[in-house]
Image (cartoon, rainbow, N blue to C red):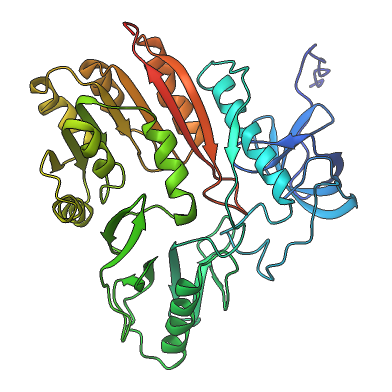
Length: 410
């Protein structure tokens, strides 16, 4: 039987590089997610731990559709933005992915990431300058951490990049001193076999009184700590969320609230009440919503300690609360939401649109999910008034973005 001659189809995609293939490319820019963008033989490459302007040899690790994911095997010509990463675990540890960039290049890349997400996902061409507030310290800023433990291999640290293997970390240069001391104490307990076998993940936060650890370990309790922000003291613990970079909280609060004031405000994903307390000083009635019971208890206590009795904090999923409770609120002057990295949960955006607040302030730690949620809000009649970024997470591709939206009637 005669074989058919294979026809060449015009416009046919280029054959993909086989896994393990080496390609030489120039990194064009940094994409959302932190990878460097490059092109070779008509295909798109996403190169990990790259700097814009690098000329590199990269090995293709895997392929998804027309996109190859690659890692650098050799830097042929380094970018002017490239610096030597100071951490000995960089490249293996999954905690940081921007240590190869100068701090100025990190800030520029994050602005580009925000703009890219607004354009591609929200379908919004934001032509104005995006101001980003740098962190006062690019190192030793992190006041919250999550550590993994492998009891069998006696390892404690962070997950390795793209895996669930534990990278054993003796010191971490982005931690505040209180958390660095706690990590060292945990490692000492591990070496002495004093940690229970079932303890494989730890949450830690730092406050003015030291560190809080959850679950507790011998001599390392899950205690209450506090921090003074904007003249107000907030209590919290490792069992509930509190922002990671305390040095940026004052400017973050100032921009997120702006000149807001009036009768009724809603604070979604309110946590320990970081935004709830200043809102209660500006509005006659404030409603906070949070699903974490520990965080809600701290929010209620923080309000009481501040002498504020005009705010109510409910423990509920935000989507459920908006569906069940918001109908009886009446007109809402101002709504603030500060969701986790996954963005607003199912039903939340629809509930916000039904509530129809006059103004919205969206505080986000992920530009992609922010853009995803912005799209239906903009389609629902809101317009983007102002936008700013805050570098809460130096040495990583993550960035905090705050967007102010105004209703169509304003």
